[in-house]
Image (cartoon, rainbow, N blue to C red):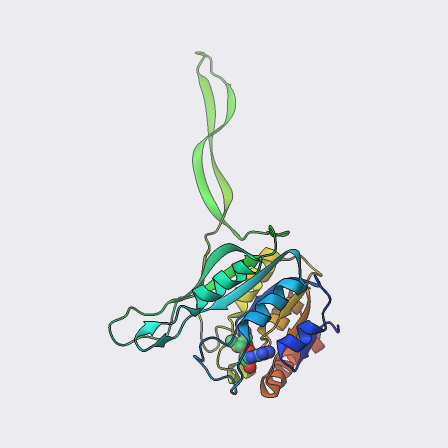
Length: 262
Ligand SMILES: C[S@@+](CC[C@H](N)C(=O)[O-])C[C@H]1O[C@@H](n2cnc3c(N)ncnc32)[C@H](O)[C@@H]1O
């Protein structure tokens, strides 16, 4: 397999050419429930799920980002069905994480605004890498016994200690033009990932030089973030139009070998 390449084909063909246990990590957003028409392409979920299990290393993780559409007044539940199918074929449902959109499209009618999508973290065995994102927590208290006072009392120095704790499994992102990415060309695709979401998941579940695969590469967000974070990557995208968009976008970052902060 060629690294750093988006294969312009059905991901089943790309994976068919991969040996068992090649990739360390998958992050992807499948074409779900015909919410959008990605140039008319369909996908064969069950075959793809089985191939993902085969090509993933033991200890590898798949981040599967999905939501349901509402048909005839009812949410389809496709995301749940997919999560349960992944379990049936051997994955662990390691964590049902939430991608919370700070500024979603407003909804009319008798439903609350749709603020989230699922990020199913599926693992083959126990995840071999976990670099949790942390945030500071302030612990105030007595620390560092200093000395015993003249009257025999213990004299403590009061210090403020800062510690780090893991963040929760709901990840919050602002989305939309100029926010999800600064690459204008990416918005020619109807459903791009926020770059920060991909960066957060990559840093959590992989280390430098690990191999990342995105079977539905779209505008190339996973490729861009993998490159910036110094991971190897491979992608598939069935639409030639989207591959062209992704390649144009990647030229800005990959060909110039420009590592930027996100
Ligand atoms: C939700 S979009 C992915 C967007 C991507 N995460 C991004 O940031 O741009 C899903 C993509 O899957 C592609 N696709 C659909 N069926 C496919 C298949 N069988 N193999 C490869 N790509 C496929 C569609 O053309 C579409 O671009």
